Image 1 (tube, helix red, strand yellow):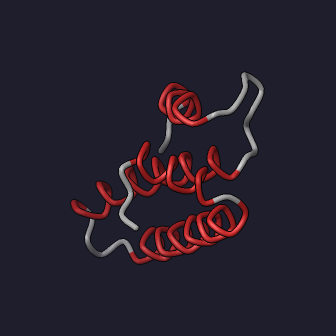
Image 2 (cartoon, one colour; image 1 turned 90 degrees about the vertical axis):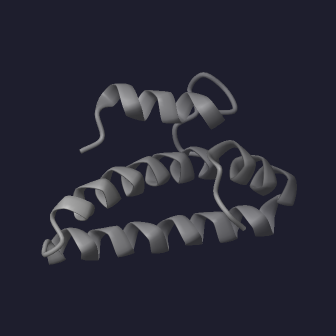
Length: 88
C-alpha cells in the first residue's frame, strides 16, 4: 500500500505547480510508485491472482496516460520518462 509520504514524494518529483495533483505527469508518477509497491508484494506472494490483475490494470492505465502525454507534448513525455526512469 502506498503511504501518504511516499505519494507526496512521488508527486513533488514531477508536479508543475504546488497544487498540481491531476496532471498526466503526476498520475504517471503515482501509478509508477503503486506498480513498484505491488510488484514487490507479488514477488513474495506469487499466487495472489487478484493483486496480479490489479497490477496489470495499473500498467495499462499508466500506458494510456503516457500515450496521451506523448501525443500532447513530447517534451513533457520525455521529461517524465527521464525523471521516473521508465523505458521508452
